[in-house]
Image (tube, rainbow, N blue to C red):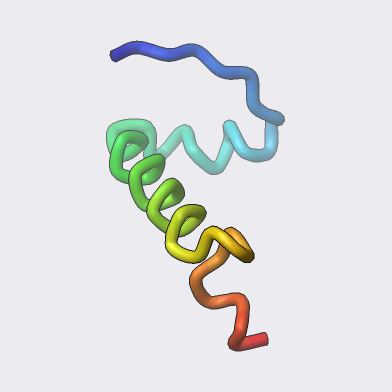
Length: 47
């Protein structure tokens, strides 16, 4: 699937060197967000 999104320049500059890894980055981000639906973050209790 191909998608197009608008992101802030600071995020784009961080992602540019990782562009070949974007599918994995998105997958890991989605896993983190869905790990604990009540908070949205798996490790938030550490703080």
